[in-house]
Image (cartoon, rainbow, N blue to C red; front, top):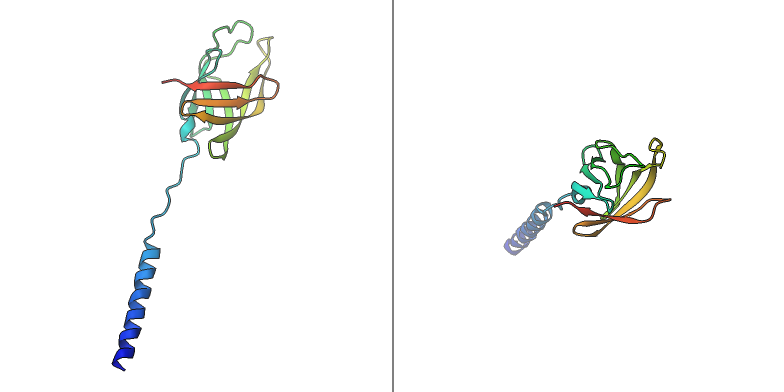
Length: 135
C-alpha cells in the first residue's frame, strides 16, 4: 500500500508540474500592424506625408515639387482609411487630384513593404510607385 501511495503522489506531482508549465507559457506579444507605416514618407515627386496610426491617415506635410497644375495642399489627407491586410500589406484610399486643380477623388489602393525604408504602392489609373521613409 505504501508503494501505491507513492505512485499516486508521483503521478499527482507530475500532473501539477505539467499544468504549471502549460499555464505559465509565455503569450506571444501582439504585433502592431501599423508600426512600419509610422513616420514621414516621400513620394518620387517630392511630396511628403506623415502617417498617424490613431486616425489611420497620412496628411500632407509637403506638396509635390511641380504643384502648379494639381494644387495639392499641405494638411490634406494623402492616404485615408488605411487597413492592414496581412503581414506588411495594407489597403487604403489614395488622394488623386486632377489637372483642373479642383477635382479630388480617393481611389482604393494597396501598398506593401518593399524593404526597411520603402513602400511599393498600386493605385488604379496611376503608374505604380514607391515611397521612401524620410529619415
